[in-house]
Image (cartoon, rainbow, N blue to C red; front, side, top):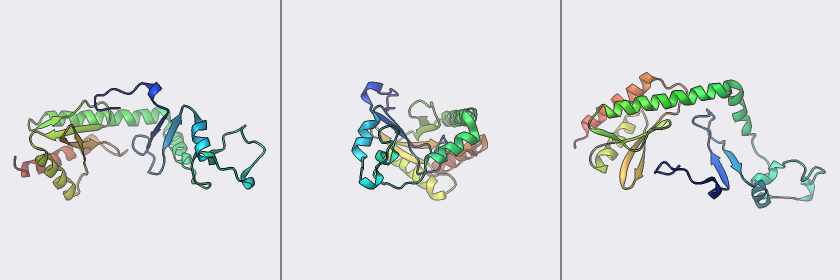
Length: 193
């Protein structure tokens, strides 16, 4: 999704890849990929030495052609365990909880006139900044992270330094969101305009 909130037409994309390490509760080192034409990947990575030939070639997917290494970990097992443990409804509930918590954080930001929301909050990410210079926002981010009580990340959009508050943990509660906002406010008071 672009910064304007519009997704590109599907006819402009040949593949879609995402990392399920946040909302799908899988640790790092696991990516999910959809492709329009799998042969474009399998032809690119195809390796067919004599010792790997078999009588089912072309009849079944041969995943050794989908990437460079011939030996690999079974990353999809991570996803399978999450799906089995939570189910579709459990994952929906988890995502809805994070969207709700993001909306809670958004309300807290709106309650303080020193801050502004940057972009609409639709998912589990809230982009915000203190009104004023980029340097003030950079200093707030630096000091918040140096205190090591919460961690926030930055981005720049159209020259504006933006602070990103992302909800990722399965264990995050409303109390955690409020704690994080108080931490940001406390540090912001220390940073002069």
